[in-house]
Length: 203
Image (cartoon, rainbow, N blue to C red):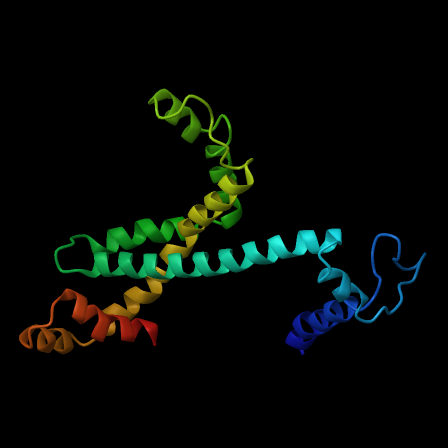
């Protein structure tokens, strides 16, 4: 019932809204909106309309963001988990705790701190100028291209530790006999990863 009320019904409602002329000038109770059928979609696919000029760049960036953010966090977390779980690393629990703390802090607080650090007079810009890397503040949050790259990097802050925790559990449950057999058969690190580690994680 909860899923139906709070997830399914709002989803259906928002889909139906797409077939109406609901906008700033057509809002109940003063002005009711009407069904317009596929008119909105024709406007969307028309290159001359301002709605279309806004929609397509946003859609393209959403696809890029979804792809890059997902795979960077997944493979970044996987690499970090493999690094921490490797035999030569000491203090595995301490390292895991350090990365989990980044995830445990509420995202709202993390983003406030990061936005302050990356501001025009934030610590990042101040240090870059003091060390002579730049002569003026970098537009991390004000330039569209810089901002897009910045949020992808900031997303790693939380995304990588989450994946690291999941893949760490998988790594610790892969039978050691598989690695020993692969080593005896002459398999190197790349083959071992491709044939044993990655299939377990991917599944």
